[in-house]
Image (tube, rainbow, N blue to C red; front, top):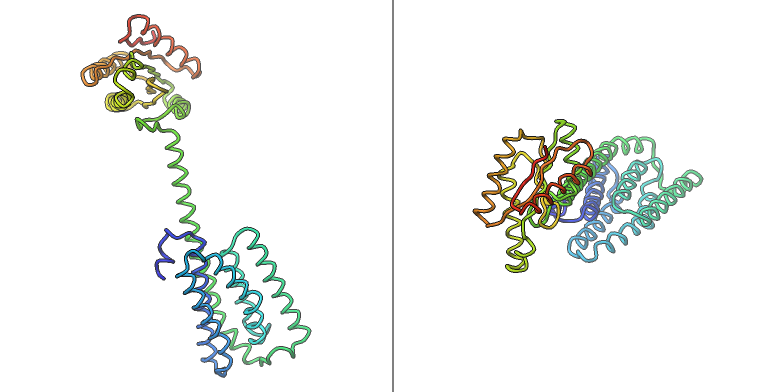
Amino acid sequence: MKNMLTNRKYPLEERMVFFVYLTMSISAMMVVVTNTIIGLPMTSNIKWVLFVIFIVVVTFLYLKKGDMRNLIRNISFILIIFLIFPVLYILSGGIKTSAIPYMIVFLLALINSFSGKLRIFLLVSYLSIAQALMITNYLWPDAFPYVSDEMMILDWATNTPIILILISVLALWVSNEHHYERNKAAAFSREMEQISKSDTLTGIYNRRYMKERVEELYEKNGSVSLFIFDIDGFKEINDSLGHVEGDRILIKVAEYMLDIFGEMTSIRFGGDEFLLIGSGYPDEVMNEKLKKFRKELKDSIDVTISGGVVKYNGNLEEALIKADGLLYQAKEAGRDKVIIED
């Protein structure tokens, strides 16, 4: 029973209905207690005891029959709205008793236990029946049990605190659960956004993140370097050694990018083409990092690269075309070369 309230592996709607069942059974038992305290005859409590038994049975079935929970929920609420609620309202004495505030509690329970067209149907039905009962109570008061002014005051005085507590507990629990679900959805959304910007093979960013990152750095520092390169002869590597080995090389290249150009943003541009985005190094620092990067690739995985380094000037497409031009110049010059824009 405790799991249904606290274990969030269960859908929120299922836990909400269980919480409403629990609230209804507790409230009915508290009515029995208060009726006893204020001196009402035991016969006045029979209806509430029967209601508690009904809710306990429904709750038991709801917990045990996981594949039938929606059906159990729907039947139980239909019985409450169309049969149990009118009987309890009439036998309790109607408008002069605290039936109206309890009706509000049940209204809140209805709102939070259903969704879609079924919720609209049940709400309209419930409000229509409630209105019809109140009009009947007003026009034909003798059809309802007599409630003296003294008993009316006692009933309201004893039940009002219960009702306020029920409303508060229900509102707090529902609010807390919705807050958790909103945070969970927001975290999932952020995770999906991160996944959408990441390359599934290498773990570095993909080109979706490129424009956002370039503009962010340019706005922050006013100086951005773009280094585009690809792996020399990568098609031949794939053809001769297989795609598994090709993937291993791509992963290692990404690892060395992160290790050597840690402050720059590493992106797999597509295929065997990569991009590094940075806030702009002095030429001597960039040359030193490029030298180290190329040496590590040769020594560890026996590959060379060709690429071009350019400065971003506010026009990304133009900068990428220029970097691609330098890359192809490096290819034409014999590969294994990185050309830095003057």
